[in-house]
Image (tube, rainbow, N blue to C red):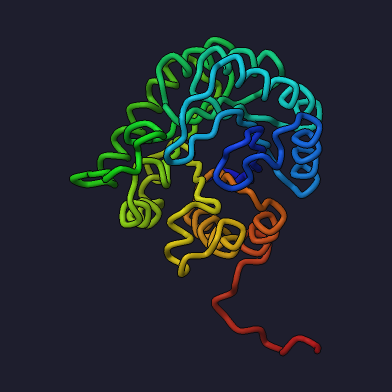
Length: 270
């Protein structure tokens, strides 16, 4: 992996996202939040106008555009912005407004074609099913092999479409049970070794609550940080997180001051 892993901060301009739905639904509040994330060290701010949490229903495209375009335009003047959408029309309008990356949970040919046509970056994510039903008994014969094969095919398609850069995302929590999520996280070094830059988004997701005894969404910061740190150490190119400042601090520890295999010759001063 070249360079440090990027930290992508999240701004959900929605009333119903699982972690912060409604908190940043107003444009001025969402813009303020995005600027705060840049100030905390985010390399990219990801703006989304449609919740894709388990059980979510689709949003009208015009409403999605209304939510995201003013926020994308304002934040693009301050830093690198991605648009989190599965609609080609929204991707095209957001790139015109200043987004540099299209983050597509559907990994659809139509959306990647838009990104390719304008030379934007593209994130292809794996999802089994659709948000409304994806967590109803997801099933795989071999989740790691199936997800990795899908992402390899989508990455090749995105490059052929002309996308300026391509990332793949194993889609933690998108049509996966807890065991599937853990298997994919454990196999991150193999996905990284395949050569396409990897993005991981596990921040505050439900499986972390279940693994930590039922922690509520706002109490999953430590678990989220643990997964992000593991992913960065495993070589991913980017992590998508709600809690930017602590993730940037963890990145600093892992990459600027990695633990030594040898004890210091002298004890540090108290």
